[in-house]
Image (cartoon, rainbow, N blue to C red):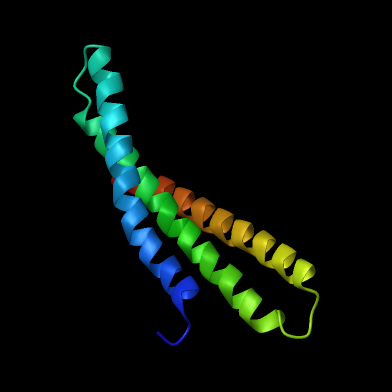
Length: 112
């Protein structure tokens, strides 16, 4: 209520879009494997899990974007702040993805 419908819409959209995309991904992966004569449930679950993990990593990057916009937009050129925030979003998301990949490799090596 304090910030208006634009900000509220951001928080309302993600919970609605993620389940819808997960449902579509699951359906398409399962159908693709079943057309090949295979059971596609496990592949579909893995694809949905990867999509959800990517959404979470991107959301953390989006927090960096929002923080930079909030801090630097007053008193600076908007185009420069948006460019910096976009690069930070991509960088933070990439670093988190690389860390997840590194940790996953270490865990697999340790467990196997």
